[in-house]
Image (cartoon, rainbow, N blue to C red; front, side, top):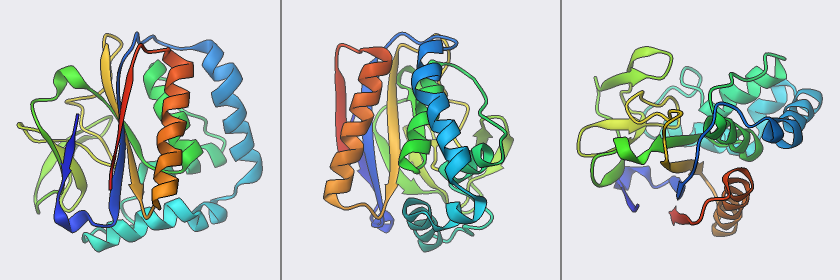
Length: 217
C-alpha cells in the first residue's frame, strides 16, 4: 500500500511492510528467544542519559522540532519504550504483533506502528496535523495531535510516531496488517537495512506467505 508524503516532512522517511498473518495473545517462544534477551541487554547496557544521545532518538527529535513540536514534551514512542525498559518496568503484553512491533522499535530505536488494514479507508498520506486536531489515542483517551506527523486515510488521522489512534489498532482478530517504521535522518543504506530487518523478524515470527515492503524517502 503506497503512502504519499507531504512536502514539509522532508526529514522524515517511512519503511512499510504489509502482510497477512494469524495473530495470537502471546507467542511464548518469541518472548523467550527474542524479546526477553533484548530487554535484558537494554536494561544492562543503557542508562537514561545514554538514551538521549542515541543517533536515531536525536534524529527523530530534530525532525519533530522541524514541524513545530516540543521534542521534550512529545517523546518518540521508541524513546518512551527504551526508558520504560531501562527503568526495569518491562513491557505491556497485548498480543503477538504488538510484541513484535515493540521488539523492532527497541532494536531499531525508531518509532513503529502497526495497523489493521481492514480498518483503513482508502489512500494514505503522511502529513503534519493541523492546529487543534485530535484523536482517541491508545490507552490515553482524546489527545491533541497538533503538528504531529500523522498517517491519514479518507476518514482522518490514525497513526503517528508519538501515539497511535485506537481506530486502526491491532486486535486479536486482525488478519492483515501494515507495519510502519517512522524513520528520520536515515541514509539509503540504513533504510535498506531497516527494511531487511523488518522482513526477517516478521518472517520468523509469523511465517506469512508474502510480505510486501516499501521505502518512502
